[in-house]
Every structure is written in structure tokens, then in C-alpha cells.
Length: 299
Image (cartoon, rainbow, N blue to C red; front, side, top):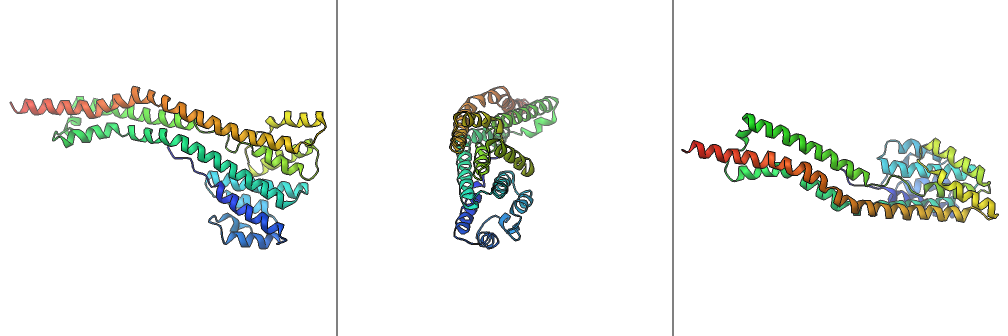
């Protein structure tokens, strides 16, 4: 059960620096060279000449870990959308940097909330082995008991229960993590597409194409009502969509905390039904058998 990791903060730092350089009039190729030599990620170094940034980023992101890859692919999508829509790159990148920082904050909150339950899971999973070592520390030859039919039965049953518990707990921890990898990202990309003056329908179609091209998971359907409201009220959709994106991240953070709190109680089921019986079978029963065997041999 791996802890949640996130590289969005480093990506956001690179993109914010790039936005500042572009806003100051630095050419894209030179701007990428400047930020690449100061980045801890190798992805910016793969942007060759600044002419096809989105393609270069997507290709470089493919070999990176999942969280970092998603962050760079979202940047590639934002860059491509800004170029297609004719939106200014500087403000678009600033929006993207803010989005990535929000995503990093969500992931940090989730990691902090899950830290306790994950640590508990790892500790209780070692109980059967600790019980075996405890018996050996008391001077009893508990390992020899596993050569007897009763010991073999205990080892097989205890090992099976421990494996069941481990997989059960892994599934519970995985289920407690956010179901959406990048909450609110579809809204931020749509804001960029709208920044070029496109109609809501054309902007949505552009975001959908970018999501498919760069393999960015989006939930565009949740924005349809917002776009319909914008058209019905005759107001620009940008601020409405931006507010929806912020709300999606707040909702994801809240749901993650609730799921992490519920996880502590749910972990009691595999603990009571599998780990503790496994501890008894592997750590206690062989110890009892060893005590009985040594007592019988001493007579």
C-alpha cells in the first residue's frame, strides 16, 4: 500500500516561472531553456525548440510516474488549447499553475488523512510474524512445530488469513482515495479555451479533443449545466466555470477526509476477522504446541 505521492508542486513552479518569462517577452524556446536547467524534473529538457511544446511535453510525460505524468499532460493540454483558441499563453499558464497547486494541496490533504490508517494497516499486518518471533524469544522451538501436521495446518490457515487480510485492507485503502485524479481540471481547461473568444459549445469541443489527444481524464458532463446557465442568463461562462472548478476541488478534499475517517473504522473488520485469527494460528497455537511438547518430553 503505497502512500499518495504528488509532483504537481514542482510542475506548477516550472509553469509559473515560464509564464513570467513569456510575459516579459522572452521567446518560448529561450524560456523553456531557462526553466529546464533549474527544474528537478527532466521533462522540461525534452521541449526541443519551443515550437511544438504540447507534443514534446506529452512524449516526455509518458515515461514519468503517474501523478507527474498527469500534471505534465494537463500542461500540454492547456498549452495546446491556448494556441488553438488564440488565448494569451502567459495568463493561461498562470491559471494552470494555480490549478496544479490546488491539486497538489488536495493530494497532500488526502495523504495526511490516510497516513494514520495506512500506518495502522502495515503494523497489524505484521502481527502473525511478531507472534512467532515472540515464542522463539521465550526459548520455545516454535518453528519445529510447523513440521507437524497440526503446525502445517496452522501455518497454511494462518498464512491464508493474513493474505486475505492484506488484500482486503489494500482494497479498503484504495477505495478511500479520491475517485477523480484531477478534480476541477476540466473547468480550468475550459476557461483557457473560452479565453480566445470561442462560444461555449466550441470551447467545450476543443477541451474534449485536447483531453482525448493528451489522455487527460476529465468529467466535462458536470459543466454542461453551467454552460447552459451561462447561455440562458446571457452572461460570460468564464467566471461560472472557474467557480465550478474551485468547488470541485473543495468537494474532493472534503470527500477524501470523510473517506479517510471512515477507513479507520472499516479496517477493524479485516483486523478482527482475519489478522487476529492469523496471529493466533501462527503465533499462539505453535507456542502452545511447543510448550506442551517440551513438557511432555521433560517427563
